[in-house]
Amino acid sequence: MKLYMNRHRVIGRRDPMLYGHFIEHFHRQIYGGVYDPGNPLSDEDGFRTDVIEAMRKIHVPILRWPGGCFVSSYHWKDGVGPERTPQFDKAWRVEEPNTFGTDEYIALCRKIGCQPYICTNAGTGSAEEMSDWVEYCNLPQEGSYAKQRIRNGHTEPFDVKYWSIGNENYGFWEIGAKSAAEWAALTTEAAKMMKHVDPRIELTAAALTDLDWNISLLRSCGKFLDWISIHEYWDPIHNTNEFADYEASMVYTNDMGHSVRKVRGLLEAMGLEKQIRIAFDEWNLRGWYHPGVHTVQQALTKEEYLLPRDKNDINSQYTMADAVFTACFLNMVNRNCDIVGMANFAPVVNTRGCIFTHENGIVLRTTYHVFDLYVNLLGDTVIDAWTEDLPCGKLRAKDGTPTDTELLDVLVTAFSDRPGTAVAVVNKDPEKTQSITLSFEAEGTVTQYYISGNSTESYNDIDRTEVEPGRRELGTFREGMEVELLPHSVNILQII
Ligand code: AHR
Image 1 (tube, helix red, strand yellow):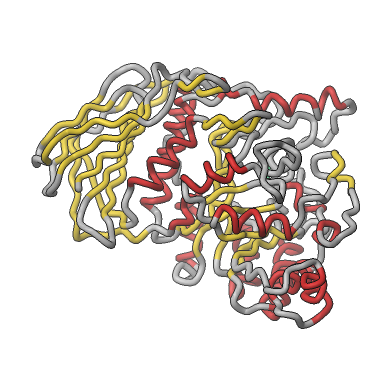
Image 2 (spheres, helix red, strand yellow):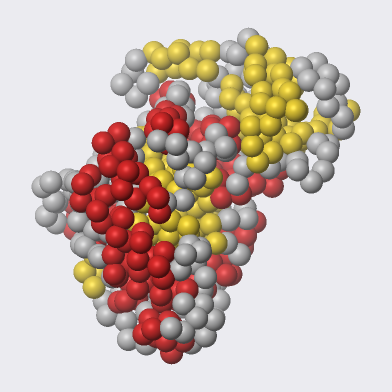
């Protein structure tokens, strides 16, 4: 395959928040995940230092919290102050101890060095409760909530800039689900009140690719919004945990940008594309495994709906399929960086996350190394690029259907603060080495960073590191040089 690019045709400067993350009060993401008081690996505030170090290494820019479905019956006031009242979490049907609340979350973000991004309860919550939360976090001292924050030991406001109104309130599974009309009314009032408290905040609201929902939301609340949120999990295994295999996962990479395309089109049709950006604030190849909950008939026993959640923790499930898919997604949002400003891997710790925690340490799953390569080696300026002789293959979809699938996926970037070019190229081919011919002008020496594993099924686990970044020096750049790409590999070609 030949790759061409025109350095002068800049698609945009990607927002660092494209490499964002999400953490929810679900299973072991918070308790036993990032927050593990009493573990020798935790600091004086109860946070796992090994997890924080790993998150800092991939420069997590923003962390969305506390949900997800959890938030739609969460009341933030239960999670602040000296007395924390355990509540029953109606979303996940477990007791929430509330020992990790807003103050702990902000402390975590400060330790990671990331922006906080709070998703509010638009399920059972009210516009007033959402705006009270903004008071608690952002007012210097006016009113009871800011004074409560001060009494809780935080004199200075937290200055939380990013806020979401609700989470998937369009879905029957969501506590406090709404109709489009109800959603328009609630978001408009909530946005108004939240911006009355702090006009500096940036607001998003839960949306999807449904036209009626989005038109109703944007017509009523669009004037207040800076973002519109969408979510996508490609392998819907919430009730089965029956993973799409490597080839089927690659078939999912076909037309990955369909949701972005639809929402972009609507924003443009409504003249909002310069005011509102897309926050892809939950995404992952794999749906989370929680049988008997996102269903009308709830499972009856904990053996049916609670214990199976431990199966999210089986590290051998997260292979090169997850890594290659993740790279293709990151390529897609970078190529759409003129309209997509944030994306949040769901989640960051445990469940389907890129970091797995256990009593004595962490496992960096394959997807973690994709973030490490992209965040630390790619440029911040996305360049228009095109290809010739792009190889295609017939790969089996999850239902067994042979499906035409492009085998290479490419992103070309430059650096706004220095010369150089960095190309991300993904070889989805499960068996064959592919090659790319760099048919453009550039100067410098070429270094190839890559992950590939020994097979499509390679994974990392406790005391087992099968996938970690490799590096090859390719010498001085020559226009027309050909670079080999290992099967099932994610590659960054730095030319600097
Ligand atoms: O499966 C996890 C859930 O996926 C999140 O809580 C929710 O936002 C989405 O439906």
